[in-house]
Length: 161
Ligand SMILES: [Zn+2]
Image (cartoon, rainbow, N blue to C red; front, side, top):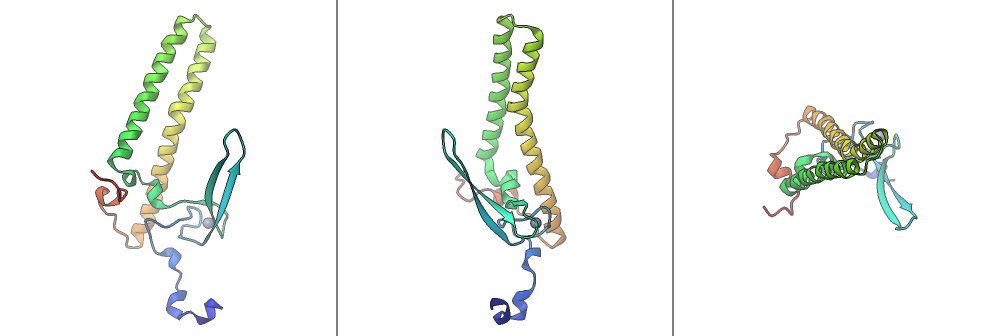
């Protein structure tokens, strides 16, 4: 119905028009139509996560801004640095603690490796993944005439400083 009544101009595929704050599908390469899926995890704490899936390929979609570090502003970057500092210090003190306990070197290596993986490798992986995702979208958007605003302009609007 809508299709029949719409002006031919409006039928132009607007999924190819870059929008920084609109969901994008990294597989289909476009701001495709999506559906919202609510994931509820019943555990000790019930958590609800809302995800957006592409109508065409069913992949999870994200907004380019969510993948852009500049969007989180100065305080976002401060938080990330603070986290890594704490994680490294935490692992360092844990290492000293375990060395004093005279546990076997093999076990020690296992525990430290596990801690480093959880606290450092995974977060770095998440950051790198976001970086690549944003770069992918940016290239696509720039091919379509999008110009990247400065980091300050891209920062989350409510940032005060
Ligand atoms: Zn898709």
